[in-house]
Length: 164
Image 1 (cartoon, rainbow, N blue to C red):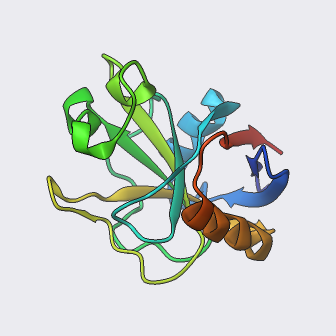
Image 2 (image 1 turned 180 degrees about the horizontal axis):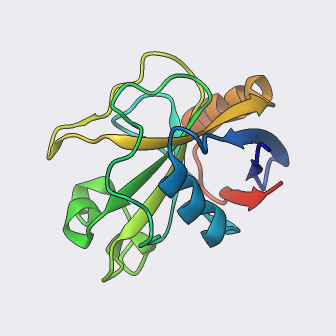
């Protein structure tokens, strides 16, 4: 039986529903499912193009590579596992004391809402993410909100992941 999660832009009250890809990424799905609910400040990716994400405490049970991609498509939901040194660069703009600077590192839970994404970071090269879910309901509305976040800014917005 399929398992689902909801992903919500809290301030804008926009929710989508994603199906976990248990067959393609069983370890990642299990790790995320067990760690839910998760919520944090929303960020629009500088490098990837059409990506919205949040940083949460590191999900240590998540595998380093499972169902990876560097070219996510609209509706992909990915997990990225970061060591502290990988995202603490001041150029990334994370506030001191934020999850990006946590001693144990951080997990990035991300969704992709448009085409032509490329996970290439000028500092470290390719940044593969584990695709663990696919958005099946609410992607068009979410994409409109994500574009608005790109133009208007993400200040005050949170991104929440929960079991459906």
